[in-house]
Image (cartoon, rainbow, N blue to C red; front, side, top):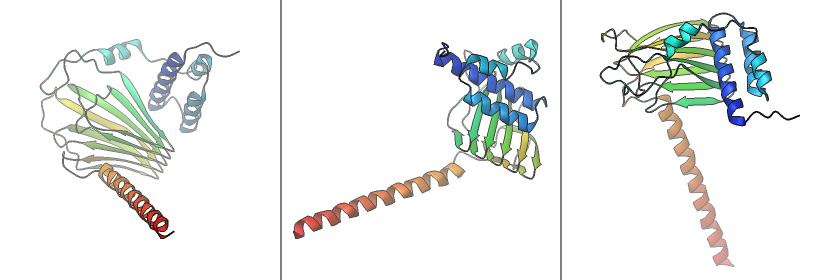
Length: 239
């Protein structure tokens, strides 16, 4: 019998399940192999019951901690409007693929970036961060997580590299006020890499080389099409 749950509700439950699995993994309640298996099952699940069964045996998150996450922070200069409430959590998953977040965006209080034989790029240079700490948990398994931060942002990086690298380049604590936005990055890289780089608004980034290569391929295809049309027209005139 087909599952009567609307697709929107099923998708929302899937996102909540993935977030719970990431939180439990970060709290050392799941081993790497079991975490990957449950994450794969969550992406394949077709019913609410299948999703609920993936977290039924895991420790529940404390209600007080959840309430603290949802509590609005006091406004500060340069921070988002007081009417905007920061989301408690969000997940970026790149499994044999890629995820990019850049431009003007609003990160959640706690984000989890999971790259499994894929890549994730997070650019915080134009991100709207509220006062206080914003957290990113980065997990790279035979993949890569790249994070760009502006020079003025207060950043703290703590990570573990297991047959991989967890690099933070030119990241130094700022001298901003205690209630200024702060970014805390932690996690683990297993046969993969997590790198945090300070970039100004005009500094080159990995996206620039990607877009340049894409533009070059586009121009080459356009030139080949024009050459094909020219040869076709010459052939028609010669008949």
